[in-house]
Length: 361
Image (spheres, one colour):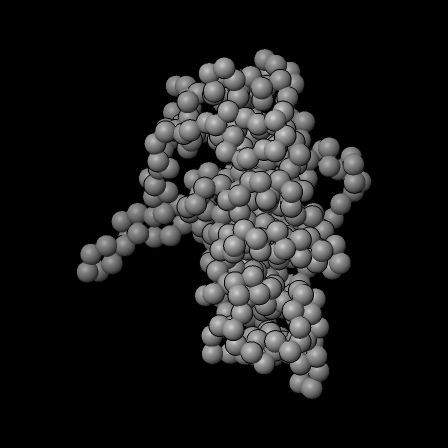
């Protein structure tokens, strides 16, 4: 996927005026070697991320969705260089992060933080909350030692917890409270950009809405930019400005959250959205059940990677990787959707026609 495949969409630009690009991901690849034998020779590779491109304007949220194993988490970790990318580029305010090292990389990481999925495993059980929060301040030499406790207390209170919690240990808190501590740990360094890696999936349903509302409030108060990784499209629709749908290491469709919810074009996106519960009867869709399993990222299929599971797959889908088509705020990689859009001349009409073909209506 080429660099011009990023967003924001044209409609978003027109509505909000010129926006500053904070993060640009261009052709990102992260492959993991497969080694076997006594000599651990390389016999293949897992293409976890295989050519992902997008941009995120400052102050906006990109939702990255897809099934488990599609490469979402690896994208987030590769951006932060917690996992070293194999190829492509990640630029933050125009600076190629892949070329940074030493102190320059450490300084850059202060501006880019992550909240991990597991609130139980991401906090050191042997450290107090105060030590967990102050650790980043010590590493980055931020503030005087005498002031760090107050800084930690303010960060904790910003997430809705009392400062009395500073001297307690992680095991004394519920899952939702632990995730608030993890959020405070990320925000104490005053970052501009935060990767939210499935931040609510391990929490009780009753707590999920509270954490999402907290993240929304913090974005507005602090002007944060988010990459929100999730498998739950119903949450992403409400939380994100733009949504990118990922399948087997690649992005197959991008659009604003509203446009994707109303008129998905890629058959995979249509199938995902058909599983989202809808209160409004007018928005309810007939459930589309995809056959087969997701192919292995170590042996991705030729042509379109979705073709083994796509009910609309044609011969060209098995032979040629679909080029990107950009139309009316949508970016889609699909031979069938491209032809349907050309025939319909309208995104909404094309989306309806594709959904009818998939459901047999």
